[in-house]
Length: 195
Length: 195
Image (cartoon, rainbow over the protein chains, first blue to last red):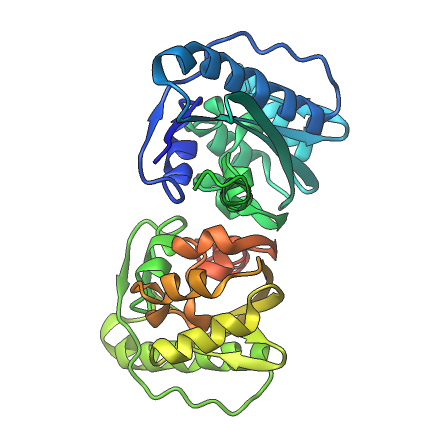
């Protein structure tokens, strides 16, 4: 049995990964995220790879060749702009006011690194989900940004939390919006014969 | 403050309703479900209304006019056929083998009953979500139907449980597939000035 490591400290990703991998270790990547692209699909693929490589190279010598590291990164994209985590209340207000009443995109990039036939293997993919948000009143926005929810989440909201009542519908994978496209990850791990 | 009652014993609906209504009572409807339609949208609207009316009329005299009752019903529809809850393992196997590798529809009907200006009010709507399921191997189907999950759920699966890894994507409201379209219900309750 291979030893899985999740290179992310997100409790949401931990919960989702546990749906397909019964036991794994969590070693969050710390490295500076260096963004060179403006295309959200390229950004999340690149950041998931940076995170995954950091942890893979850190632990490879200790753990031997039975290790599989999974890195992931999520961004929200609206009108060609990438929205990261809001830095304060004004930032969260600006983000949500901007995309309410419209459709935006959530991208999650995932990288899987492992060893096969003594050589390092790396596989990266991304999943896009469109999210449609109801029109929101100023009162609804103020009420939401006064909670703790927006501040550790890309785009300033969590679909699985209090923000759920403002989401009209999605097109694509729901878990991808939560932070890990677990059904595609499951199928890729099966295809790569890791599970 | 109005007193809300959920006319359903589903723990999933209870959890979803608590996202918009802080306190409510649960009184599951018991009545025989009488299906007269073959159109899934009409079926779920009609069944949600039957459930809601049963509880509304049962408790109205005791509770006075500040009561709001919510009834809901969910079915899965594939190839013009309505799939209810599987009655046994063979039934669950048949349902899942049938719709795997393709797109099916989930319909939830919701009825809200309350009193306004001394007269009974009833409002019914439905929400449809399309769900795309990955190709599944016989082994994957056998493994899933050997769990407890399929047997209390329309269509024989729960999107929020173990079946999630087989769902490629959806189009529409995720919570509608879980059993209650809580974002539309939130907006309708606001519009009707119930919350």
